[in-house]
Image (spheres, rainbow, N blue to C red):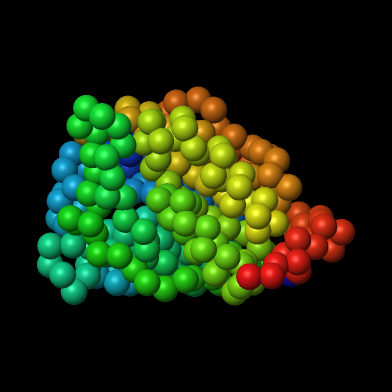
Length: 273
């Protein structure tokens, strides 16, 4: 297993045109690979952030076939990287809803894992009408997903999942060392809770956490918080893309240092419940 390597989070401002979003994602993946990243993570909804929730139905792909999935496989293979494909809409048994699927591809382009977002964002963010109801167009998943790679054990979660620590404990129980959380936090909730929750999930599980986000003004009028992060197991922010708009942030992931921290500060062994 590789003990230390460079990882990158990609920040985007995705819109309603899939082709334009994939072009932006491809350019940013290339920048991350050029910077030496072996693990690259895209944000939630990287291929489409539509004007309406139902727009994703028109571009939803069957499992393991379609242009968005081909893009992820080709990008991972071309750059020889592990690529976490944010989320993409995959068809479900319900014709009116999709699965928000987070895919992990290996350096040979082969798909290694699929995680379907479990917790759906059905909330009223603030007084005045900022409301979201993901369950109207997304069918929730129910499986906890980790995958062992030469870089370490990667656990997958998505955006609103961040508020449910029991999911991250379940990932830890399956051996997760690197947590990857593609997101599209709203500007309101991000300003209030993004750094707090990302750092908490990393600290309480003594894991690295990669949190790529959407960040800026989208053509549907929505504003997302950005601040794509890489957090270390002691809660330190190792890298952050602080500007609005697209970009990347890179940091070193050192699993030997993480193991040393877990040995000298064995909080995970002290659990009683």
